Amino acid sequence: MAKTRTQFVCQNCGRITAAFVGKCPQCGQFGTMVEQMVATSSGSSGGKSTAPGRYTTAPIKLKDVKHDGLVRKTLTNKEFGRVLGGGIVPGSLVLIGGDPGIGKSTILLQVAVEVANLHGPVLYISGEESTQQLKLRADRLRLSSDELLLLTETSIESMLSHIEDTKPIMVVVDSIQTTHTSGLTSAAGSIGQIRSCASQFQELAKNTGLSIFLVGHVTKEGAIAGPRVLEHIVDTVLYLEGDLYHRYRLMRSVKNRFGATSEVGVFEMSERGMAEVPNPSEVFLAERKVDSPGSCIAVTIEGTRPILVEIQALVSMTPFSNPRRAANGIDYNRLLLLSAVLSRRIALRLHDKDIYCNVIGGLQVNEPAADLAVAVAIASSVRDRPVKAEFCFIGEIGLSGELRAVSQTEARLKEASKLGFKKCVLPSSGYISKKTLKVDLELVQCRSLQKALEVAMLPA
Ligand SMILES: Nc1ncnc2c1ncn2[C@@H]1O[C@H](COP(=O)(O)OP(=O)(O)O)[C@@H](O)[C@H]1O
Ligand SMILES: [Mg+2]
Ligand SMILES: [Zn+2]
Image 1: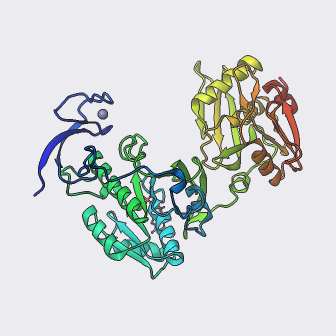
Image 2 (image 1 turned 120 degrees about the vertical axis):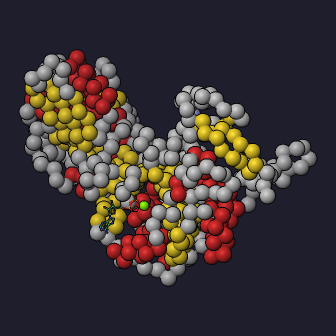
Image 3 (image 1 turned 45 degrees about the vertical axis):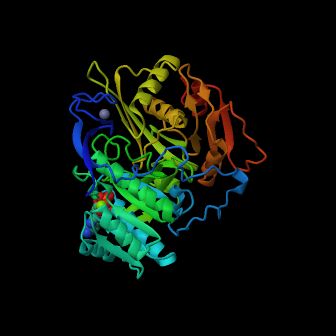
């Protein structure tokens, strides 16, 4: 029988104290400390002695370290492989977060079947759905594999023995919130349980080279299972985002020990599951109505991939003394800043007008390189004059109305040229090598927003 003691764990940040306190000393929240039993002789952190002379590890010279290279298991699902950094890394623990119903189980079932067919046995463990439900989904998506094993289980101890028995090369755990360990008496889904289970999976992945995918539900605050308790335990964190009412889903890597972060995979929710969208720019621009005022094309970068998006602005007279500003797909404060710059530096009359700004396709554009396109779209709507269809825009706008250089300009220009744009307005600073950049695109470099608006034929 394991010896137990109790401790108090903050349900918000995971801070542990020995005695009860009303206010968490770490995050300052009140009433979040919850008493929990801990078995002192089990758990992932216990057991190892740190007394001198009793170490189990040893330092090793860099040149003596042996490895077989990072052999990724490649996938035919290019979009999923892309966010992972090129494929599934053996021994990695990946967390996939997202709102309920966004498609986490769907995409993981697709990937599980693919890995099972290509590389070897996969164990799909669900604590939320029965094996019949999983079978129904697989049938609906027309997926099948002889190497895919299904298991309905919520106890991590049973999961670990099943993994030992079946020896899969990849495991999916849907979800980490329904998984519980008997070492803790607290309910499944509490911070203590989630953290303990995730560390046990991490240990298993590191010791056996098994790739483990955890599904994590996003709580109301927008973080996975209470603020960030899991993000530092796992190797890779992917968020599946998108509007439930739109077809497109974006999978974004916010942390990746084996690849670039903020890499984006684009999927379309269809009857056959999450279908890859290999050419998102084309898709996002497909419904574009050319020659309509207030529409402007921005060349943005998501991770390492350039994506062209249409930015729309609608500026209309307001009957109220407090004009409205609504931002959809761009940061609200960024919109306020840009309208202030337009008012002061371009003398655009905006104080008596509502501004609505929209990024088409449900994409969230967080980088400042889209500033210029937003500003041009607003100016175009105010003047009721369309921006020519052959134009696209790149550039960050400073408070004095100057255009600032952005990163990865060449990749952006190549994509713009590939999509048939003829002119790109961009900042004059920043080095562009004309030699390496073989694009059929006229580069109009401008120092200021004022100049850019003149080029777009929307003079102040
Ligand atoms: N029987 C069905 N027929 C058509 N679409 C379905 C069916 N069941 C689920 N879906 C769609 O699949 C989407 C994703 O579901 P799921 O992968 O279970 O999401 P998650 O695991 O992220 O909660 C749902 O939002 C729904 O639109
Ligand atoms: Mg699910
Ligand atoms: Zn706290």
